[in-house]
Length: 341
Image 1 (cartoon, helix red, strand yellow):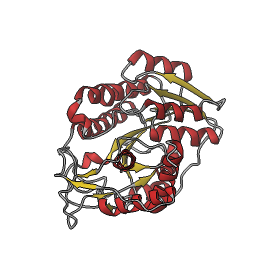
Image 2: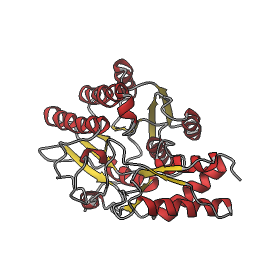
Image 3: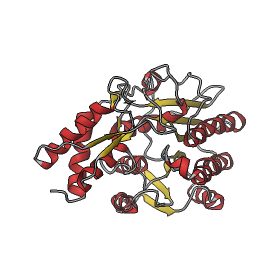
Image 4: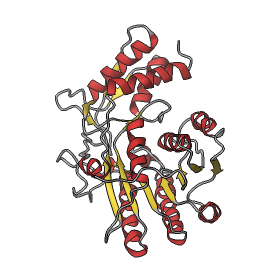
């Protein structure tokens, strides 16, 4: 394994910079003296205050430039590329969430298809050293074979969200082939941590506890065949992305897709138990969630489980954070941020 370290002299364009992963990646790069151009439309898919809180931590950096805009606005994207001439682009802006794609499909086509097309077109007309973009573990659909490997067949998405992410991989492959754009897609597996996305289960469960409401668990109460998730702590994700930044794919096909997950799936009920324990510690008292069991939702998959061999081979990356450690950091942050003590 022989990979190049981060180059602080490059200009990094990060879309979705006020988002969960985008914020942490921007901060990591700024801490290392890199120049970061952040783009975000600050939409209200979830609490915008959280996005403003993240941005407020980036604003003091001299090397940070923020552009409020939507990646589906082609002229804004073209102008940004022409003005700042980014060397490396990380496209993390996307309409996220599986269930929401059933209620609001327009948002997914707008952001994940048209928005991504605008980014990749801009890379074509303003050549970049590397384009990294967010794909998702949801492209594996209802694959039964685990762990999921990058070589697996992914032509059976079970949600529109998954279909838009698969389309990103296809578009990137085509543009890479036609215009020699070095591109890397990352299939993220359930990313969690402090300042995370409130639409994610662990965050929602914590909200429900403080609202005095039961949590809904979509596994039919079937503990033998419980849902498995590959929960990946945010710092591990950022480390993986950082290692890839200066290491674009080389060779005939300059497009590569990697799983970026924990390679250690947990039963949902085990994860919930760890969350209860972490929250008990943060609050200094024993707590437990009231639970209601319901059938699995359309678009949800029974298991996500990443094989991370390819990424480890490429850049020596392997996640280190246990769910106990990661959830403790989350609940400590949550209790402090929402003043729950």
